[in-house]
Image 1 (tube, protein in one colour):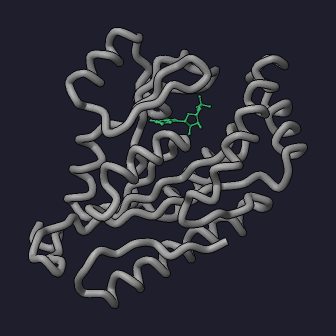
Image 2: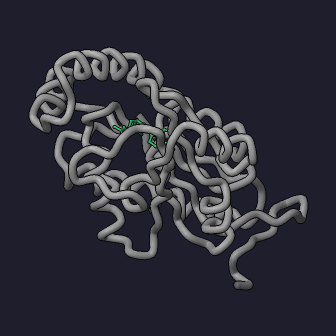
Length: 218
Ligand code: 5GP
């Protein structure tokens, strides 16, 4: 596809696509937000992560995650097949390098729903080389987060406590992202994210060359 690359100032080529990294504490509604974005933008794609954790009830292999055992995950990692990986709640999670890079080359918008460690690695590896927007979804409050986690009834009380503790650590890292959005109301959250992407689009259309970086909003 000839439109899949653009030249920058130095004449080098960069993919036309856009990488949208979305992070949020567990239970903040990130999955619903991603699903809604994909429904409204059928040309956007979500990277399906690989994980060593077991499927939750209703989760499907190849749709929610690729569920693999630890040796398989380690093999993928040692072969360089993962763009980033992280250990979360004693399970390994990782993003397929080929899927992301190929989709970007095809000019697609790729959503990565990953944690803070993974976002740091992606920013370090791809920052300045691809168009990248990082967004952190915040819960309205920690109390609302706990209520949501309890309401979905997929974790034990101990697991919920661990997730709340981790959420509090993650929230401290929100300022590292280009944008933060409080997920109080789904429609407003979608509207805010779409606006951020639209603004980034406008900025990159206006700048014909040079490295484009997302402007921070709070
Ligand atoms: P869950 O097990 O609740 O689906 O996800 C737990 C955490 O893992 C969430 O914060 C989610 O964003 C993160 N996660 C899912 N896939 C990946 C991945 O490929 N890489 C990284 N770094 N985090 C991931």
